[in-house]
Image (cartoon, rainbow, N blue to C red; front, side, top):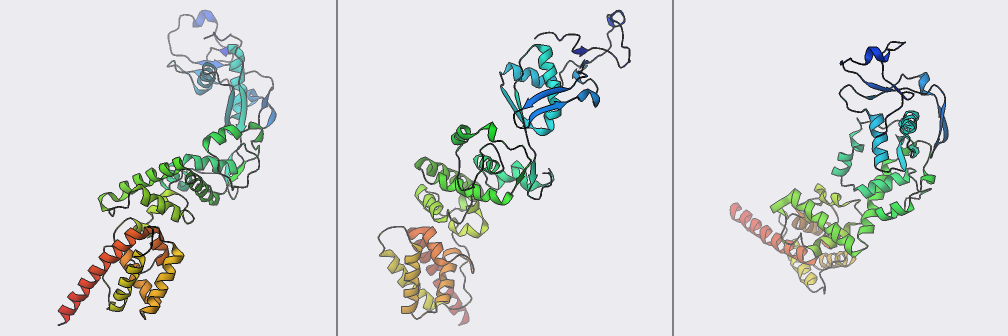
Length: 381
């Protein structure tokens, strides 16, 4: 490393007159090394804000760059690191703009060419207030817990003015596309406001993008599989963690969820877990007969995919022919499929579960329901 010149470094005590070399030559007490600040204005070009002129000597004393324990402070360390790593552009927050003259003085003292500096504007809340660490819902750990991916967050920042010009929010960029399209000239000099309501929209765009390619489908299925096994473990219904089943669930649900994590919401547990509670508080013999007929009709369908419109038509037809009130029939079917008394439409449930799982649950539910009904009759006798 090149030795700093005496013009750039002040190696002295706090005495206004300093001490002569003859006094300090043989001293062994701890000392620090400071950077002697220029007393003149320093003008530099900021890649975002244009020409910036500062005179930090008017507000600051000579900063310590090497501490008494021999370790450098940030100002010296970042300059040396950036030079040794051949950094050409430094992008950092605008709060570091006031430190740039110090860094330029260090580059000059060391005889090095400084990189280009671009100071990014502050990110604010939607109402213009500053982001705060106390806002736990914007912490990286919370966003990760909610299922948002790094690429979703990058797309969200793009919408806030992150180097891509004006964005409409209806396009999702992959990481290679982000690298290719990014331009420092498009960075916004004004503070940008983060509208957190747009984050789910970005996540939904990513989900749709991933499900539009074979490799993306594989990655998404693997992610869902890992999350399910981590949350439910051995409680998972048999057959629900197969690739085909998970992929169908993803495609059937993609218009109603924002990210894979949403499929683990308690209201959707019926997709993954067999219903445990199918006890009914009144006789449903008419519904049992109608369900058996519905199962027969479902078995006649050619493929494993149940389209909501088709099963809705079949259920209405079956309830009519069996002379069962449709609402009562739907309540019975929902209970057999999920154990829930309220929830999504039965047609929606069947389209997500698919033909095999639907028939399996209806069959098991009928068997349990029939046993409970017989037990209830025996008890009453």
